[in-house]
Length: 149
Image 1 (cartoon, helix red, strand yellow):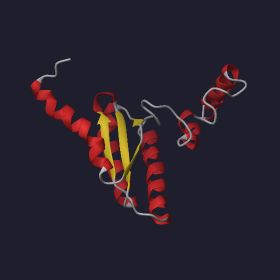
Image 2 (cartoon, one colour):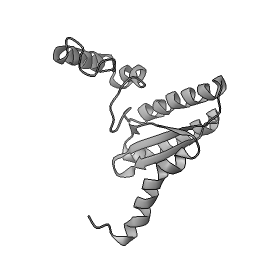
Image 3 (cartoon, rainbow, N blue to C red):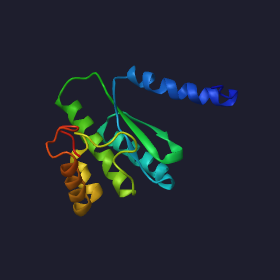
Image 4 (tube, rainbow, N blue to C red):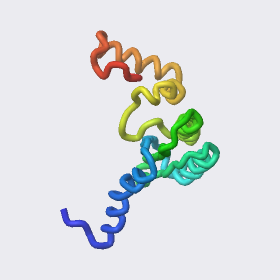
């Protein structure tokens, strides 16, 4: 596929974003989505969370569909304080996503790390339906074992 010349710098920047972040530490890539009109608000809130926890968070996006990839960079600094900052920042990123009418995941599903947030996003009735569907299709729990749904 031939890429028009005017788009090449954007694609190059996109390809180099993750390697650039890897030079700063270990990236923990999140995956959320918000309604497109709320995209800027979500990015501002994520930036405030980054400052509050003193944890670098760089937000990449598929702006056309509202998908966000807030990427927390885990600095190569050992210690409980560093782990608390990362953990607190990661958890807090999901709260504004839901408040802004978004979803916990735009592309990659809900596994172990987002398990505690699923019920909040779906609500009790929809969460119960999801669990019943999982049980109906996987009564022996052999499909995607240990995951949220």
